[in-house]
View (cartoon, rainbow over the protein chains, first blue to last red):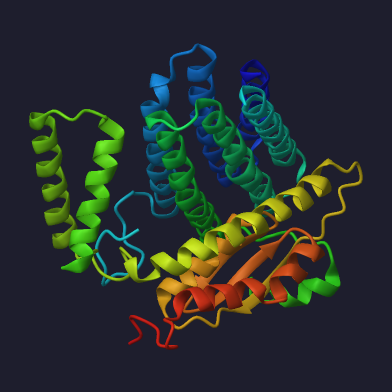
Length: 95
Length: 111
Length: 166
């Protein structure tokens, strides 16, 4: 049964990749990348169960968090041209 | 007992796979960025949660299922934040949502 | 102080769950990294009722199952719309006002809206939100105000006061 879930995840990854390639705007690509990150996390966990070694879960857990920080950084970069710009001038380095 | 957990987890895994595929189709089919966010929302919420819950049921009560539950928790906190950050930065860049229905379009005068 | 203690407890529990080892040296290492994290978070001034809302714990336990059920229902609706060949979508932008008293309440409301597929909060400024809805049905569900009311109850103490109102 894990193999079915793995295949479904891989097909969905292909769709997300197609959206990332098609665009049209840079935000569509970021959105597709975000979904791709979630799917990678799922793939790592399901593959761990498929191969009978669920030790990969720590990597999947980290992937969730790094995906989040990465997307926030990229959206800020697209908006302001650098990742440490604060939205209001009186605040420093706030998300 | 084993049969019950197997059926339950298989159902959850299959349902989750279905929702993932639906979200992927939505990502490809929907017409503009803001609509596509709903497709990505399906992948991030029910698709991922059903697959992870299915794995949890399969595993039973152990440290591994606690890690899976933590993944669900983190996903539930991070996914709306990323979606909102993305929508806001798209609005900042001047990307507007497509409105097809003129009657409802009045409500979005500012955007 | 209470917030720092509960944050430390939560972080240490997370450390134990993720490592799974109970040797003295590793426990001491965990304790020191939790202490370092608390010191840094304190310097960043994020340990308060907003960064670590323990006053919501009990009512959040009641709110989350309801939210989960709403998310499941909305998922099925949106999935049906996406999969139907004619794709009957009707994208629209709604302007709504959250009736919560604090910024924390507004953020919880906005995040709950975004978590529910079919509606995405695209702008939030002091309680006024702009919500992109995929279908008319999703928009009507939001406009019925059920979620607003639930988040309102989540935020209020039993005696009707709200923590953190300026």
